[in-house]
Length: 231
Image (cartoon, rainbow, N blue to C red; front, side, top):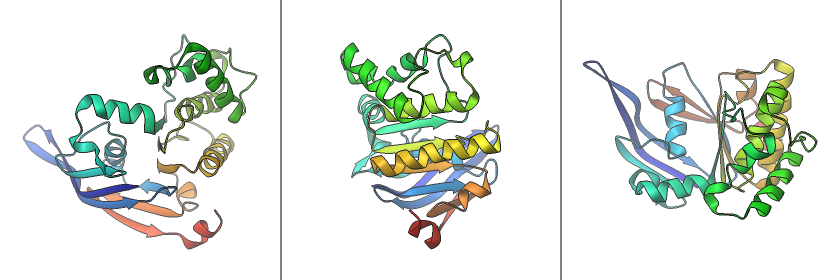
């Protein structure tokens, strides 16, 4: 479970101070699916970075299962990210010279697994997202939707507790968007993940059990009972 208390993030922009997050309090339970929306520059991606331990708050605490990510030494924080948190980004972030299989395996290298184990787990992860026959393809040989499936497999191959997605369908057309969301939602349900997603797409936000809206660094959370019952 995530517990955020008084999370503030300030940046300097010239002589001005920008409050990307302004005292955010937020609880995200195990297995929750939360969508984050808001205007550009409102703090959406900053909040996701806090949840992923990719950035530290100026003030406040970001606890994951009772451990404050904001105060962890960098080595321990890196380990938490490697073991417990999977990331999916809008731009896929695949290594162009590596095959789909090899891209997925990169997530397992920090865990110190043997090469054979990495290969087996990567192949299974690709099968789980419908790419069992594309393991040897380079990113340039895959469609945008297929590349995002590889990115999802890479995020999930380490069996994380948390899946964080930043505009995962932003580079896809509507039909491919729906396919990718089906993959993400299936993985969320099957693995009991805590799933947090940033999106500008209101159609996707309406289907989420919980919606967090951020404006000028302040957050409002609403519950969608119909979506929660449809889970």
